[in-house]
Image (tube, rainbow, N blue to C red):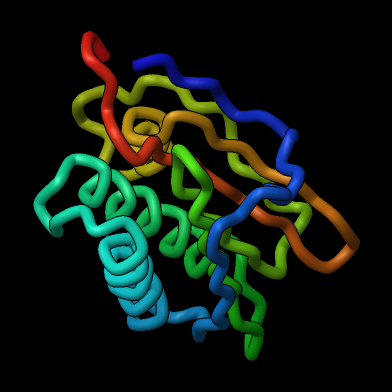
Length: 154
């Protein structure tokens, strides 16, 4: 599987077959609900099972992006936004938070005794592409795309 690393290129997909956007509280519960919703929508829209590799990838990627929005991207009283796009060959997860000045750091391998900082390594491993975009002075969006089907040899 080829991965494209962190990039600022995050133009909204113009060919979304389906799209859903919801706001969640910037809490651990909000992050859990965002992950559950993303998995539910993914399986409903694609017909793939809950135990398929793409569904697991969507769950892991959404959990990490939502958790980061809560942990590093929230201001008191401000929610985060989850946007899901079903594209012809992939599923795109976008999480928008209220801290545009706090961009995700470059992904680097962690030592075995580190107890945090591995989340973006998961995004790197499970997403086919991911990146971030700052569109205004008040928000940033971190996005990731997961292929719907794996191809032979990947």
